Length: 360
Image (cartoon, rainbow, N blue to C red; front, side, top):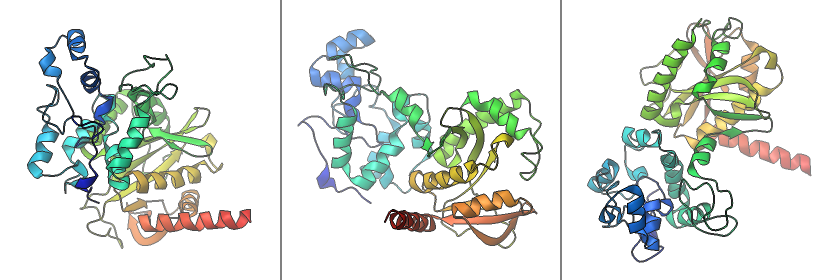
């Protein structure tokens, strides 16, 4: 969907709040200072010259020193597009590196771009205005404000928001991207021969090797975004019970009797739980939620799982989640089950209809 240029919205005559990359400029301290006429005060606090902080938004002629040389801005101007999602290379490595860098207010750019594409710019600007206004008194606040400067109320700043991004919640579970503090859990799982019996082999790793894996994982995130996410599965009480990972299916990947359709982004996943949490329905619950995340939050068209032919528990989980067996066999003893985005939506409609019938 291309955004209708006629829908561009200016909250004021000289300010623009939308950006090419998906950041909401109105929550920037610099732009807020320009609106309030307090640029000189901000310049003294930041030890900058006032003229360096004159900014009316990155889509105007008045741009602060921090953004005037932005490579993404230069890129979209060169390609003559209004938003990054209009580019054939979206999401490119430059945008993904920006999203996964160390600045929390960059973390929502992909989410914001998707919202603009699906709901339109005018609706997104309205939603963002509400998001960055104090819920108690309505005062505008910036990305890193923890409390409202007017009423003192607690605010949901970008640091808190980043921690909530990509979290998947179900009735009993919270599934969230892995962090370095989770490496000991991963080692418990990956080094357990019984858990790994049908997943190849126990890794027998030391903590140093897990740290090296985490560094490689962070690089993959910056290259491929959330299509390469490793998740930790937790109970609602915070107890960690397992892990799951998403990985892109490379074009060169193939197996006996199956080949993924060309020109489709395919991901592969699986689930591993600590033994004390087996046979409680957690794996099925998590897999349904992960499938929903894949087709709602990534650009994937196809999701694959490779259960071992001698692992009936895993096969049952995937079938209950809605995956269909193909004729494929990979890694010698693993079957290939698949789910398409359309099939996932069909399953959702069927379940919704069943719930409605039961309620009646």
